[in-house]
Image (cartoon, rainbow, N blue to C red; front, side):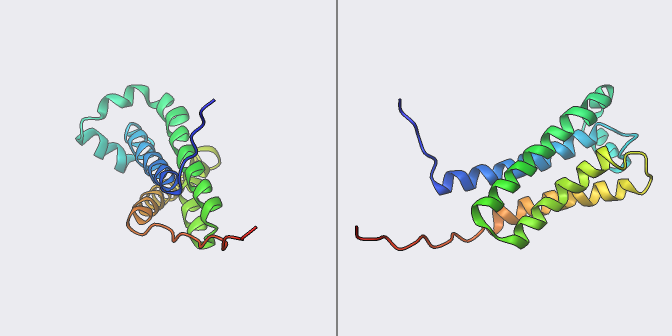
Length: 145
């Protein structure tokens, strides 16, 4: 059986794209809920995404958490590979804030601000990962056995 092992560059590209896809997907899903997230809903309507409003419940309860989990898993994997604590913490703040809004503080009026801050963190961390990728750790020196 032929198995292919991904190189470091391929796995880094996968975590970058996973984080970006998760952030963009969560934002597009939020654009479909005009009543829940007025600022993003208005932006979505102006971009022609008003039709998503008909599927608001499905989008907010199913699609948005899926994209947030994709971003969370990609960020956790990136942290596991690089072990840079401050990057790991910053990359987890956004998805955790968004999930807290969706599942813990849904009815609280102040939680919309928390949601927008979480989305902003997700986008900023995704852009930062592309602009300044984590430094590769030096491998252990080869042994002559």
